[in-house]
Image (cartoon, rainbow, N blue to C red; front, side, top):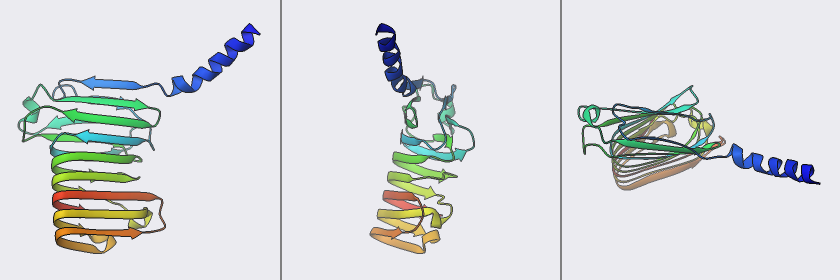
Length: 200
């Protein structure tokens, strides 16, 4: 009985080990870029400080964060923390100077992206998957790829311009929005509080 119980205990623990939490932290992001393994097709939640933000899809199964800009390169107190468990990951970037900072985050091209930024200029390119993006103030530009790939699209701007030429939509003013449904498999939700939203 004892060997059987030991084997059963080992088998029960295997799924837990496979989902063990992995954490990577960097305190001086300007001089020590963050790099962490993450599988293609996973779900990523990004909460980033304000600035010029570039989210770029690549063929590598990694998440990497680099900072630049006139003041970002000289900052020693920008920090990043990436946590992952299986196919779910969370990235937070904070600290550093108030302006003239560029943050580039490279993630697997095939990923489900959840992105929140308070203010700045945000560009999202080469991401194939679900996208849920909110920017409180500033300009947001998202490369959507093939519009037929989406099952549902919801885009809105509280104050500013909304330009979504792949979906045949262009609006400006206050409280502008549109929704569309299709036969694809991905979902896109994009919102800007004050500023411009461009889906291209």
